[in-house]
Length: 171
Image (cartoon, rainbow, N blue to C red; front, side, top):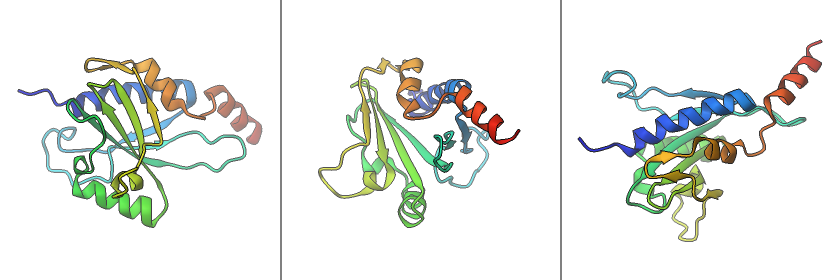
């Protein structure tokens, strides 16, 4: 049985999300798929995850869709890696409704992680570039959970800051 690098990536990403929940109060939800539903038929989902990063002081809260893709042979995200339902979700939520839809791509061989805007990932622009790139984040098929968590922290405030702001607002 061949190793499904995508499922390995998702399991490791969930460790990263749990770490970010502890340190930065990242809210996250895994949309079910047939594998996680025990082989039962499940309707196509818009993405792998729904993420709710804590808002920075003075900024509105938001949620975003995140699709996780990994490859042991491709060095860059390929449009063909996105299933038709995912492409439709990117067009509807990302393009039409203006919601954040990110695609996180792991180049296993190159040990790179790329964050793509979903709409840009689907464009035919030959010069398209990821939003962010992180190098040396894995060894073989094992992500460095701490490095990836640090990379995905982006500008999220630490949990203590978010909790203090909440206490202040609700006294």
